[in-house]
Image (cartoon, rainbow, N blue to C red; front, top):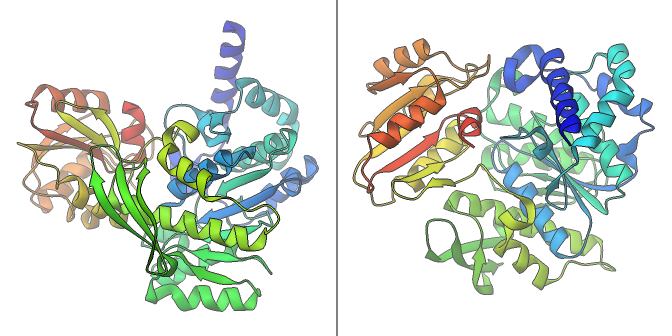
Length: 435
């Protein structure tokens, strides 16, 4: 066991240190074509063509929607592959089967067996990870794989699949240096996952980008539906970690008082997107539809079924500490609006960012009546404390500037009373270090 652990750690060192990794280094790891992933998968005998898929893109919510869909298919008795990124604690979170991370041996063997291919093709970290997921899902003979894009859509490494359904959750400004400066430009990149004759589900009706999706869908003869037109959710009861809700379909009450194992009302939009995806799935797969019972079971037991972490993650009860991976303007705004409604004595925020975001936009969302613990995640892409200090000063936010996430978190805890509220946000990587 110890030998395998050592071998696994050496394999991860190879992946993390020898390959360009967008999460760590940013632009230098971003590939603007699909050449590498096509070449790599050809050497693997194109595993991506050996199982059914659902493909998800979008600015926010695609990871949550992917987990909900995985849970639903699992509850319906299917063997489900789930590919998401990035990971929080362990690399294997990126590639799950029925909610469980793949074996360490699968990671070790994939890298050992294909190092010569890597040296010939020189793929990025993300390209290797995508190829690994495809090969594992093919070998494990999954019934369906839920595949989340990384960045964008059109040129994302996952975009060599021909899925059963395409899903685009929503569009907001993020990664503008790669995807475009306007919502329609970004939408055009995300719309790149829409394929010929493959139905597409749009999560949220956004008038600024709707025509982009409609034009692309018409061009590809892809039936398009909009989840927010079909499904609505009303919260009936709430606690710190989940909801009891009513679900409406086309303004008629469909389900009364069902449990949803999510928190943060902004995340309920993703439930609507997943429900519309399953509705379209059932329309296209009349011989093997997903029934009502597995859907309700999946919504009530999302975390157990899929090991879903990182969104509205309760890290402590007294003081209440909630971590969330929201990291762009739209995601962070929704999280802060919801979280700050919780009754509390003092509000404390442990906050860090990555350096390729526009900090002034984000800082203007941060409540000034909070005690801040600004910090820097342990990755090259992290925004330096000096920059955070400059922006905080320019936007009238005061606080402590602490060089490591762990020390910042401990300072927030030690200075809190049991009735305080602590939020950990701004970057996936800040939360990942605490998890």
